[in-house]
Length: 269
Image (cartoon, rainbow, N blue to C red; front, side, top):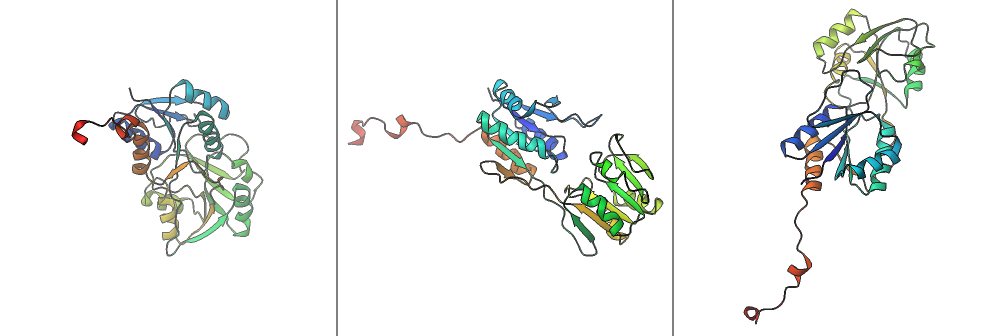
Protein backbone atom coordinates (compact mmCIF):
# COMPACT_ATOMS: atom_id res chain seq x y z
CA UNK A 1 0.00 0.00 0.00
CA UNK A 2 1.33 3.43 -0.95
CA UNK A 3 2.14 5.65 2.00
CA UNK A 4 0.66 9.18 2.01
CA UNK A 5 2.29 12.47 1.08
CA UNK A 6 1.77 15.50 3.31
CA UNK A 7 1.26 18.83 1.55
CA UNK A 8 1.63 21.97 3.61
CA UNK A 9 -0.65 24.27 1.73
CA UNK A 10 -3.37 26.84 1.51
CA UNK A 11 -2.09 28.08 -1.85
CA UNK A 12 -3.28 27.41 -5.39
CA UNK A 13 -0.09 25.47 -6.05
CA UNK A 14 -0.76 23.22 -3.05
CA UNK A 15 -4.23 22.39 -4.36
CA UNK A 16 -2.80 21.66 -7.81
CA UNK A 17 -0.15 19.32 -6.40
CA UNK A 18 -2.81 17.50 -4.36
CA UNK A 19 -4.93 17.08 -7.50
CA UNK A 20 -1.96 15.72 -9.47
CA UNK A 21 -1.10 13.18 -6.78
CA UNK A 22 -4.73 12.15 -6.42
CA UNK A 23 -4.85 11.57 -10.18
CA UNK A 24 -1.78 9.34 -9.80
CA UNK A 25 -3.63 7.32 -7.11
CA UNK A 26 -1.28 8.52 -4.35
CA UNK A 27 -2.91 9.24 -0.97
CA UNK A 28 -2.60 12.89 0.05
CA UNK A 29 -3.07 14.79 3.29
CA UNK A 30 -3.18 18.58 2.94
CA UNK A 31 -2.49 20.67 6.04
CA UNK A 32 -4.01 24.16 6.25
CA UNK A 33 -3.10 26.69 8.92
CA UNK A 34 -6.75 27.58 9.58
CA UNK A 35 -6.31 31.36 9.31
CA UNK A 36 -8.92 31.69 6.54
CA UNK A 37 -12.58 31.27 7.50
CA UNK A 38 -13.71 29.53 4.30
CA UNK A 39 -10.59 28.07 2.67
CA UNK A 40 -10.64 26.49 -0.75
CA UNK A 41 -10.23 22.82 0.03
CA UNK A 42 -8.04 20.49 -2.04
CA UNK A 43 -8.86 16.92 -3.01
CA UNK A 44 -7.86 14.20 -0.59
CA UNK A 45 -7.75 14.34 3.18
CA UNK A 46 -7.47 17.76 4.85
CA UNK A 47 -6.07 18.66 8.25
CA UNK A 48 -6.73 22.16 9.62
CA UNK A 49 -4.64 23.67 12.42
CA UNK A 50 -1.09 23.62 13.71
CA UNK A 51 1.02 20.63 14.73
CA UNK A 52 2.57 22.03 17.89
CA UNK A 53 5.90 23.13 16.47
CA UNK A 54 8.67 21.06 14.87
CA UNK A 55 8.55 18.30 17.50
CA UNK A 56 4.79 17.90 17.12
CA UNK A 57 5.03 17.79 13.35
CA UNK A 58 7.89 15.30 13.47
CA UNK A 59 5.88 12.98 15.68
CA UNK A 60 2.82 13.34 13.46
CA UNK A 61 4.85 12.41 10.36
CA UNK A 62 6.09 9.24 12.03
CA UNK A 63 2.70 8.24 13.46
CA UNK A 64 0.95 8.67 10.11
CA UNK A 65 3.63 6.97 8.01
CA UNK A 66 4.21 9.98 5.78
CA UNK A 67 6.56 9.13 2.92
CA UNK A 68 7.35 12.72 1.86
CA UNK A 69 6.39 16.34 2.55
CA UNK A 70 5.76 19.09 0.02
CA UNK A 71 5.94 22.58 1.51
CA UNK A 72 3.72 24.62 -0.80
CA UNK A 73 2.89 27.36 1.68
CA UNK A 74 2.89 31.09 0.92
CA UNK A 75 6.33 32.62 0.20
CA UNK A 76 5.99 34.70 3.39
CA UNK A 77 5.02 31.76 5.65
CA UNK A 78 8.42 31.63 7.32
CA UNK A 79 7.44 29.87 10.53
CA UNK A 80 5.81 26.77 9.04
CA UNK A 81 8.61 26.37 6.48
CA UNK A 82 11.26 26.47 9.21
CA UNK A 83 9.21 24.03 11.26
CA UNK A 84 8.88 21.67 8.28
CA UNK A 85 12.64 21.71 7.70
CA UNK A 86 13.40 20.81 11.31
CA UNK A 87 10.59 18.24 11.61
CA UNK A 88 11.37 16.31 8.45
CA UNK A 89 15.07 16.18 9.33
CA UNK A 90 14.23 14.74 12.75
CA UNK A 91 11.76 12.21 11.30
CA UNK A 92 13.96 11.21 8.37
CA UNK A 93 11.29 12.19 5.83
CA UNK A 94 12.27 13.86 2.53
CA UNK A 95 11.08 17.46 2.05
CA UNK A 96 10.54 19.57 -1.04
CA UNK A 97 9.93 23.31 -0.98
CA UNK A 98 7.72 24.57 -3.84
CA UNK A 99 8.83 28.16 -4.36
CA UNK A 100 6.81 30.05 -6.91
CA UNK A 101 8.95 32.64 -8.72
CA UNK A 102 8.61 36.23 -7.55
CA UNK A 103 7.32 38.98 -9.81
CA UNK A 104 9.62 40.60 -12.37
CA UNK A 105 9.36 44.28 -13.27
CA UNK A 106 8.34 45.13 -16.84
CA UNK A 107 8.69 48.24 -18.95
CA UNK A 108 6.68 51.06 -17.40
CA UNK A 109 6.72 49.72 -13.85
CA UNK A 110 7.57 52.14 -11.03
CA UNK A 111 8.56 49.72 -8.30
CA UNK A 112 10.14 50.59 -4.95
CA UNK A 113 11.48 47.71 -2.84
CA UNK A 114 11.55 47.51 0.97
CA UNK A 115 12.67 44.73 3.31
CA UNK A 116 9.61 44.36 5.52
CA UNK A 117 6.20 45.73 6.54
CA UNK A 118 7.55 48.38 8.97
CA UNK A 119 9.78 49.70 6.19
CA UNK A 120 6.77 49.83 3.87
CA UNK A 121 4.80 51.86 6.41
CA UNK A 122 7.68 54.30 6.76
CA UNK A 123 8.12 54.67 3.00
CA UNK A 124 4.55 55.75 2.28
CA UNK A 125 5.10 59.33 3.47
CA UNK A 126 8.47 59.47 1.73
CA UNK A 127 6.75 58.69 -1.57
CA UNK A 128 4.17 61.41 -0.93
CA UNK A 129 1.16 59.12 -1.22
CA UNK A 130 -2.26 60.30 -0.05
CA UNK A 131 -4.49 57.34 -0.99
CA UNK A 132 -2.97 53.86 -0.71
CA UNK A 133 -4.21 50.47 -1.88
CA UNK A 134 -2.88 48.11 0.82
CA UNK A 135 -2.75 44.43 -0.18
CA UNK A 136 -0.26 42.96 2.30
CA UNK A 137 -2.80 40.77 4.11
CA UNK A 138 -4.20 40.93 7.64
CA UNK A 139 -0.92 40.37 9.45
CA UNK A 140 1.10 43.52 9.96
CA UNK A 141 -1.73 46.02 9.50
CA UNK A 142 -0.97 47.48 12.92
CA UNK A 143 2.26 48.88 11.45
CA UNK A 144 0.15 51.35 9.46
CA UNK A 145 -2.12 52.34 12.37
CA UNK A 146 -0.02 55.34 13.40
CA UNK A 147 -0.46 56.98 9.99
CA UNK A 148 -3.27 59.47 10.51
CA UNK A 149 -2.77 61.38 7.26
CA UNK A 150 -2.95 58.65 4.61
CA UNK A 151 -6.23 57.11 3.48
CA UNK A 152 -6.04 53.32 3.02
CA UNK A 153 -8.05 50.90 0.93
CA UNK A 154 -7.34 47.60 2.70
CA UNK A 155 -8.15 44.35 0.91
CA UNK A 156 -8.25 41.07 2.86
CA UNK A 157 -9.87 37.66 2.53
CA UNK A 158 -11.26 37.78 6.10
CA UNK A 159 -12.04 40.76 8.37
CA UNK A 160 -8.86 42.15 9.97
CA UNK A 161 -8.43 42.42 13.72
CA UNK A 162 -6.23 44.59 15.92
CA UNK A 163 -5.17 48.18 15.30
CA UNK A 164 -5.96 49.68 11.90
CA UNK A 165 -5.28 53.03 10.25
CA UNK A 166 -7.96 55.55 11.29
CA UNK A 167 -8.67 56.67 7.70
CA UNK A 168 -9.55 53.49 5.84
CA UNK A 169 -12.01 51.35 3.90
CA UNK A 170 -11.81 47.55 4.20
CA UNK A 171 -12.77 45.37 1.24
CA UNK A 172 -13.18 41.61 1.73
CA UNK A 173 -12.32 39.73 -1.45
CA UNK A 174 -10.05 37.00 -2.74
CA UNK A 175 -8.33 36.33 -6.05
CA UNK A 176 -8.05 35.64 -8.84
CA UNK A 177 -8.57 39.25 -9.89
CA UNK A 178 -8.91 40.80 -13.36
CA UNK A 179 -7.05 43.80 -14.74
CA UNK A 180 -10.37 45.46 -15.58
CA UNK A 181 -11.59 44.99 -12.03
CA UNK A 182 -8.37 46.31 -10.53
CA UNK A 183 -8.38 49.34 -12.83
CA UNK A 184 -11.93 50.15 -11.77
CA UNK A 185 -10.98 49.80 -8.09
CA UNK A 186 -7.96 52.10 -8.45
CA UNK A 187 -10.00 54.71 -10.28
CA UNK A 188 -13.03 54.59 -8.01
CA UNK A 189 -10.91 55.18 -4.90
CA UNK A 190 -8.43 57.58 -6.53
CA UNK A 191 -5.46 55.44 -5.49
CA UNK A 192 -2.00 56.96 -5.94
CA UNK A 193 0.14 54.14 -4.46
CA UNK A 194 -0.09 50.34 -4.35
CA UNK A 195 1.55 48.49 -1.44
CA UNK A 196 1.98 44.73 -1.71
CA UNK A 197 4.25 41.77 -1.02
CA UNK A 198 6.30 39.90 -3.61
CA UNK A 199 3.95 36.93 -3.47
CA UNK A 200 4.43 35.99 -7.11
CA UNK A 201 1.97 33.91 -9.10
CA UNK A 202 -0.91 34.85 -11.41
CA UNK A 203 -3.81 35.00 -8.90
CA UNK A 204 -3.03 38.52 -7.67
CA UNK A 205 -0.78 39.84 -10.45
CA UNK A 206 -3.57 41.88 -12.08
CA UNK A 207 -3.07 44.73 -9.58
CA UNK A 208 0.49 45.18 -10.89
CA UNK A 209 -0.79 45.32 -14.46
CA UNK A 210 -3.39 47.89 -13.42
CA UNK A 211 -0.81 50.02 -11.60
CA UNK A 212 1.43 49.93 -14.66
CA UNK A 213 -1.46 51.00 -16.90
CA UNK A 214 -2.18 53.97 -14.59
CA UNK A 215 1.54 54.83 -14.13
CA UNK A 216 1.21 54.37 -10.37
CA UNK A 217 4.17 53.67 -8.08
CA UNK A 218 4.22 50.29 -6.34
CA UNK A 219 5.81 49.61 -2.97
CA UNK A 220 6.84 45.94 -2.76
CA UNK A 221 7.97 44.04 0.33
CA UNK A 222 10.81 41.64 -0.44
CA UNK A 223 10.50 37.98 0.43
CA UNK A 224 12.10 36.95 3.72
CA UNK A 225 15.61 35.57 3.53
CA UNK A 226 15.43 31.82 4.01
CA UNK A 227 18.15 29.63 5.43
CA UNK A 228 20.16 27.66 2.83
CA UNK A 229 18.09 24.70 1.69
CA UNK A 230 20.81 22.13 2.34
CA UNK A 231 19.22 18.71 1.91
CA UNK A 232 15.81 20.22 1.09
CA UNK A 233 14.78 19.79 -2.53
CA UNK A 234 13.38 22.87 -4.30
CA UNK A 235 10.93 23.15 -7.21
CA UNK A 236 9.39 26.15 -8.93
CA UNK A 237 6.42 24.52 -10.65
CA UNK A 238 3.55 22.25 -9.72
CA UNK A 239 4.68 19.74 -12.34
CA UNK A 240 8.15 19.49 -10.79
CA UNK A 241 6.77 19.17 -7.27
CA UNK A 242 4.25 16.48 -8.23
CA UNK A 243 6.89 14.49 -10.13
CA UNK A 244 9.21 14.63 -7.11
CA UNK A 245 6.48 13.43 -4.75
CA UNK A 246 5.49 10.59 -7.08
CA UNK A 247 9.14 9.52 -7.26
CA UNK A 248 9.29 9.32 -3.45
CA UNK A 249 6.31 6.95 -3.51
CA UNK A 250 7.45 4.92 -6.50
CA UNK A 251 11.25 4.77 -6.40
CA UNK A 252 13.08 3.22 -9.34
CA UNK A 253 13.66 -0.49 -8.73
CA UNK A 254 17.24 -1.31 -7.87
CA UNK A 255 18.98 -4.64 -8.41
CA UNK A 256 19.41 -6.67 -5.24
CA UNK A 257 22.68 -8.16 -4.09
CA UNK A 258 21.54 -11.61 -5.26
CA UNK A 259 20.93 -10.29 -8.74
CA UNK A 260 24.36 -8.71 -8.80
CA UNK A 261 26.16 -11.84 -7.65
CA UNK A 262 24.08 -14.81 -8.78
CA UNK A 263 25.69 -18.26 -8.66
CA UNK A 264 27.46 -19.38 -11.81
CA UNK A 265 25.67 -21.98 -13.95
CA UNK A 266 26.82 -24.34 -16.60
CA UNK A 267 25.56 -21.96 -19.28
CA UNK A 268 28.05 -19.37 -18.06
CA UNK A 269 31.02 -21.63 -18.76
